[in-house]
Length: 132
Image (cartoon, rainbow, N blue to C red; front, side):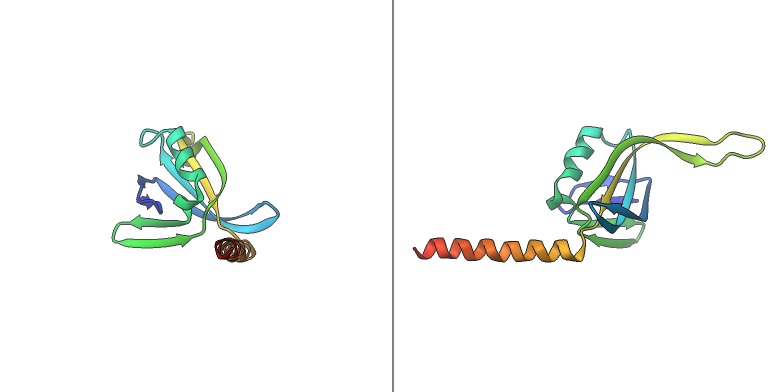
């Protein structure tokens, strides 16, 4: 599975899990992306996911299927954490693996409307300055 970011960067992902999350006073959809720690560095993943212009549109490529996700541009978590890859049984313990995990939450409808309104106000202010 691969994740393609808005700037064209592509990363191999081990798993992508959708889940609801409560962040910054709002209930949001979010995606937890798990990446093998040998595929990228923590710093590179940090730089990629902190920029909303890069995470504004994500494409998940799973074989011949592609899934697009818009406005998942609020990073709520970036961590190296143990993930259980095999459950414990009566004969063997659980197997865990350290993975880079980044959780990206989606902007709310209100946040998108405010950004659009702010963009219109900025454009009007620039045109007013240009008319002087």
